[in-house]
Structure formats: C-alpha cells, structure tokens
Length: 116
Length: 181
Image (cartoon, rainbow over all chains, first blue to last red; front, top):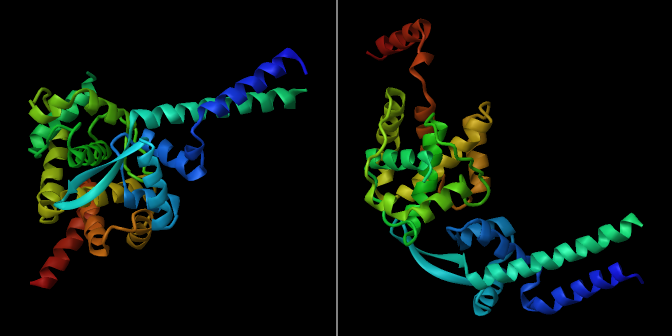
C-alpha cells in the first residue's frame, strides 16, 4: 500500500471516530439536511409528507436527534393553531458537517481506486 | 442590504400586513415567503428564485435577507416608490387575497394554498382546475378541499388580464348578461 492510500484510509478512520454513530442513519441525516436548508424550521406534517414514514418512526428519530442536541422543538402559532416546528441547532450543523467530510473522504477513496 | 429586499419590504408596508420580528416569529417568516412569491409571479420585479418542495414556494436567499435584516420587516418603513404596474399588482393582492374572508382567520394557510396553486399554474399553464386540485392535494395533503377550491378561483382572478376581454368576448358577456335579465 502506498503512502497516499495510507493517508486516505487514515482520514476515513479519523472521520469515522469523530462521527456520533447515533446520528448516522439515513433518516436522521436527511432530517438534519432538510433542517439546514429550511432555516425557518419544518413542521412535523411537512417532514412526514416528504419522508413518507410512519408517525412513530418520525417521532423516534426526531426525539433521538433532540436528545443529542441536534435539533430543537419550537412551539409556534399559525393561524391561531398551536404547532411544533423543528429547527436545527449549531451542534446539529457541526455534526452534519462531520458527516459531509466523512462522505467526501470515502468518495475521494473510491475515485482514487476507480482510476487505477 | 439588497434593493430587492428593500422593495419587498416597501410592498409589505403598502399591503399593511401585521408582521413581527422574523427571527422570533414563525408565522411572519411563513407569510414573507408566500407573499414574496405571489408578488414575483404577478410581475413585481424581485430577483428571488423559489422552489416548491416541502415548504414551498420557498427561497433560501430571501430567508437570509430577513434573518440578516429583521428590523426592517418589523418597522416596515416605506422606502421605495412604485410605478403604476406595481401599484396595480399590490391592489390586486389587496382585493383578491388579503381582502378575502379566508385571509382573516386563515391567512397563512390561505397564502400557502394560493402560492402553491400559482406555482403549478405558472409552471404549467395548460393545467385545468381538476389537475390543479389533484396536484395541490398531492403536494400538500393537509390542505382542506374547500381551501384548495377557493384557492383555484383566487388564482384565476390574480392571473386575469383585462386585455383578455376583447370586443368579441365583451359582446358575448353582454349577451349573457341580457339573457340573465
């Protein structure tokens, strides 16, 4: 194995160690990504409509992300109706950034190997 | 601050909307997004691009603008002048959207409905009422049927141009009016 490969693998392992493995599920990554884009926050019904998953699955993922400090639930009033809106926290953004970096490293490795 | 955002804020002032600090109030943020889209589609020159997905019509750049300048929304000082075309657009919105009885108690939902239907109609003008209804319901299943039906009618009024009424059409309308009498 050459030095370049050594470095790539080392970076992947470093990235892996930095990521909170509880945040690394497809549903949670998508929720965090959406909340990053929609800075205003998203309502439960909007997330549900997009992800097409059951209420229970969505709630458990949201609660987990909330417990880890990656999103907060904000009580809002819309047309006199009380609703919950989910907003990403600074910790959530940082975690997503780590995941992005990790994915970049894997992509880098795959491109490198495919070119050979 | 961008001129587009200043102009948008002036339009809000003209429309006399009850808005709070967008950093603190979700309903204000919601109204800002939908109102900017309706203004743009009706011909107001605002350089914002919108997408429909999930929360739409929604513009990320507009979001940054009101987060960075929340006070101007709250204070709503009128800083831009409008030409006659822009005034006509604002009056149309006042009459058909904000003046509608649904806007009194369901402003956010009503704006969301109208903006969503406008998005579909403008991007695919050949869509008929039934198609608009189905598409809107698919995209936003939580909107009530009657809200969508009213929204479709409001969108027709918003997109109507008086030049559509040619002499021939006028004659036909007059004939029908006489028949009614």
